[in-house]
Amino acid sequence: LTSSIRYNSNVKESVDISYFDYFIRIFFHIPDFINSQGVKYRYKLHPFDPTWIDGGNDGSATYTNIPPGDYVFHVQGANSAGVWNREGISMNLRVLPPAWQTWWAYCLYAIVVYSLLLMGKKWYDSNVLRVKVTEMAREKTREADAALDDMQEQLEAQDSLVRNVRKRNIATLETVREIIDHRAEYLPDDVSADIMRDSNGHVHALALLEQSLKYYNDRLFADLNAFTADCLAELCREESSFHAVTTINEVTDQLVPADNATLLAIIIHELLHNAFRHAFNNDPKSRYLRIIMGIRSDAPRGSLHCELKVQDNGSGIPSGVTGDLPGLSLVQKIVRHFNGTMDTTSRDGSTITIALLLPDSARV
Image 1 (cartoon, rainbow, N blue to C red):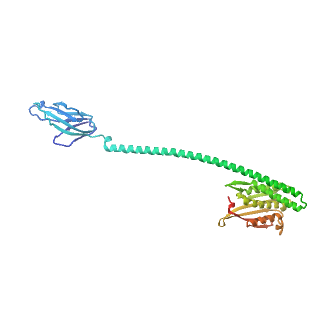
Image 2: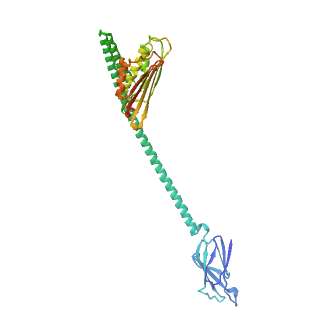
Image 3: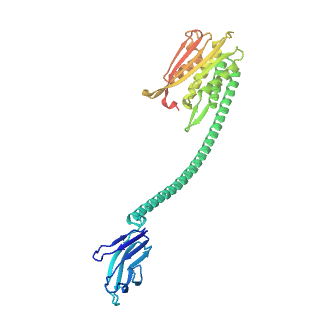
């Protein structure tokens, strides 16, 4: 690209040159009507030229690749007589920078650099935070694992303690049972001996209850469904002289605190024992025994209702003898302890229905 400049000294404004004008020629002229060929020139582009440049009698100056900036072009001339005009003339020259070197470009560069720095700082902060969070998560995981290990050890120790206590209680109850059996052999009265054997059955029922105990939330609870299954299995073996009895266990698997479960276990054992002993009387017809127990909440009263029902298709309970049976008499006493009710019906067998009011703490 080429720019040619003819400068009028009467004009004081500077001349702007594009950055892409790589070749610049400036023309100047001193009129000499006597000998125009004897005119000489010298010029200097300040601060691009360090010294004056002798231009001879050529009235032009050529420059290439001038860096962007503000310059002053000076030119002096001498006539054919060799007299120099020391004042000369001057021209302001400005080479405009390219778009990528303008002030707004530098502002854009600054914005880009600031944005990159900000993004880098955010990435660094997020990376540092991620590392810290990961380390904290690992530390919490280690702490949780250690706590779980400690809890597992405590649970194992508690479970071992419960098993040992259960074994000791069962051994104690079995010892008491053996003592009762031994004493019953020396009683002359058959009725007294039967009472002793019934007591022996109660002790054995408590031993079965011990096997159904579970440790939960620092308390002992009983699984009465498992206890009932054990009772039915024991009674079926003891009464093997009878024809087979179909047993149906529909006792709830909801856990009950051990303090309430003890009396409930006595009720269940007595009702099942009486059914096996008195209901069927060697009747060869098909026989069944069904036990149902459920627990429901009574929120307004802050208590739990326990409903227990034992059904069989045996001979039924004769009217007026409920209180005369030692087992049922004991059951009635326990029912009164729980502020409950007990109803008996004899139609196609016997049905005993018991409703108990348990404290709310009986639920788990």
